[in-house]
Amino acid sequence: MWHFKLKYFQISIPKRCLEKKYYSDSVKSTTATVLPTQNAASFGLPEKGQKLETTEHKVFSDIKIQSNTSDIIKTSPFLTSDLPNLKPVTAIIDSRSVPFDDIPGPRTLRLISKFWGTIPVMGTEVAVSIIQSFLSGGKFFGGILSWGGNAKFFKKFFDIYGPVVRLHGPFGSDVVLLSRPEHASAVFQNEGPYPARCCLDSVEKYRSEYRRYRQAGPFLMYGPDWENLRKTIEQSLHKSVTQQCEQIESICEEFIQRICTIRNKQDEMPPNFKNEIYKWCLECLCSVTLNKKLGFLDSSGLSATSDPGRLLDGLTGATEAIRKCEYGFHLWKFMETPAWKLLVKNCDMIDSVLNKHVQRGITSLRDKKDKNVTLENISLLEILLLKEGVVAEDIMTVLLDMFLIGVNATAHTVAFLFYHLARNPRCQIKLYEEVKTSGENLSKENLKNMKYLQACIKESLRLDPPIPILSRLLNNDLVIHHYLIPKGTHILFATHLNTFREEYFEDAQKFKPERWLSNELGGFGNEFQAFASLPFGHGPKACLAKEIVEMEMAVLLVKVFKKFRLEYNYGDIQSSNELLASPTKPLKFRFISRV
Image (cartoon, rainbow, N blue to C red; front, top):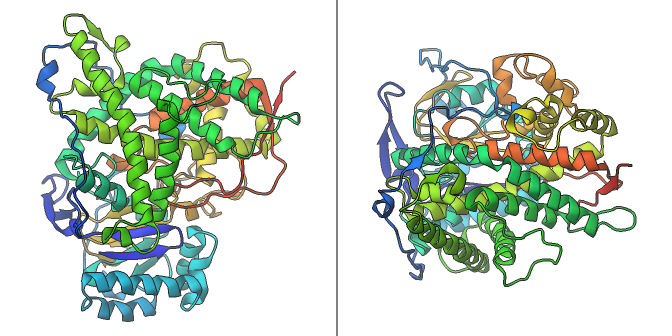
């Protein structure tokens, strides 16, 4: 296992990446692809996991859903998901291609990599941790890894070595940093049917080894099993989102009442307002997945022993534990560290609550066996339970991904939407002029027609994406910037850095929603510039729930800005740029009621 730390972002290339082979479809790829498996290497962690009771699909084989699914829309109606239709960029390998060894990069890492191959696994972990300490302390490269975030780290390397940089690792586990949108386009258009990325090793270990789930979840899975599960989830999510707009409206109204309750005499939010956004996200997610509200926004507050209280505590605790586990030296792979114990404790807490609702869903379907089942009277959870080949374990991993990753990403995005609009009164006025004419009942079609609202969402995502760095494991040999990069190489895209470049975005540092209304390409001057801002990722590995997330945020903006005017009177708020990023300062917004 090799690790290399980018201040807040852990690059991890585990052994499992070399353990299983998938072969790409002959039409899409002619090269054998080495991809990760679900089973990570174990270093003697005691077997404490408890396996869920699995319920096979045959239990509900006689239940038929009465619906017409021929009109399922595969693309989101929101601008934030739209990209121009691009043709695949084929890598042409010829005599002008520059060998992989000639890609520039830090000389120190080149020298160190020559010795790493002779160090045993434990020794490698220790050696890498020492190297990381030197890097962060400024012994090499002028202390670039102690800067404020990954964007500056990438910028420093690109300024020194050019648009393509190689970081050397042992056993051929090299990382290549790419800086330009056309590089991202080339990788994404040639990644084959089973894109691969390496991250969240601690979560995978928890699921595959501690809990012994049969699958690691859609965010971590690869190969044909991942493709089948993703298709099932996409279809189910779309069916669910078409019914959820009214329920999301109700939750947003409760959130507004909560704002009125907790603001002080200066109309200002308390320092822990981020937790209130988490509660709103969780309530929306429970509504979408379970078709019920759990009471996160109740005026009486949350009991620590209630299901919503345990979910909130489990989410915040697990998020902190993941950051600790994925940052720096992975000692938890060899022993039960405090960070690992914290992760297990909080994931178990989330597990126990979600398992209760999965079992209730199974019981509910049994009760409906003799009745007509329609999309209007079953939840997303029940839709998934009815899918052939899907068992309770699979649904647990889907729900865990949505709660751990989806809630954090949505809360981060909403926080910065409020921040940027509070800092730009001119944009607030234009947004208010658009939303004030909206009716009481919103729909997907109404939200789609609010162009300035959608532009505000897209501009905020450009400036502060929830995932500032994207990764891929190359499925095929590929020529980028005339360098021949072999398959199996770990690629990192500095997408956040591109969003601040003037060659792609005029006045790139400013919040200007109007830029997304300028032309038919949605604000992009050409098709490659579409890859300069990828807040939800791209391709098959893009965010599964982006349509629901965008709908939730759009409804929230309509409701909030019809009711309030926002102000923020403190210092600049930055994104932490961590894995599972978050704002760096308290969200002490003023929500001033409109007269």
